[in-house]
Image 1 (cartoon, helix red, strand yellow):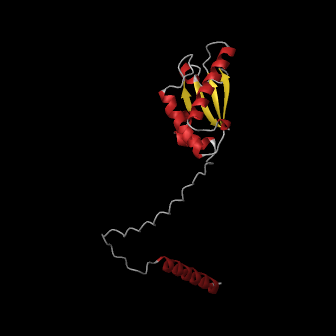
Image 2 (cartoon, rainbow, N blue to C red; image 1 turned 135 degrees about the vertical axis):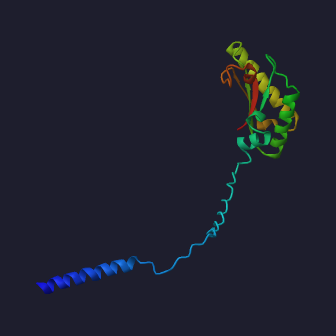
Image 3 (tube, helix red, strand yellow; image 1 turned 60 degrees about the vertical axis):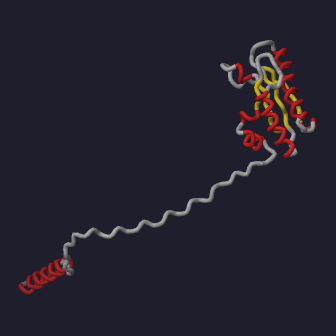
Length: 173
């Protein structure tokens, strides 16, 4: 039994020595006050190639982009009028140039505000659409590529602003 106690104590001491030796620091560290070197940041990944939006050159999006947005595809009329004024002429001239460069058919929509009877507004919308169509044709666009249609007061854009509803809208067919 004495022999077993001796071996037990011997094994405990050897185990303790192994544990303590594993924890010992073999290198002597010297305290240095110089800052640690800063690791260089990796170069940022190259930006992905921009997504090029392919707009069909004969689409409404192409007309709107050339005209500066959807508002560029509209001409506005005075109350109870269908004559093409100076600002409408400038817009229609730009549309005509685009149409002459692109073999595209368009529909010119005539719209009115909600004042007046349905029949009167359909007739006024028709006169507005035909005034815009006739101007495009006068600028050299073939009449066969332009169709005029009236919606009267049936498709208002803004119920609080009558002027926005008195419009001619050119859209690609």
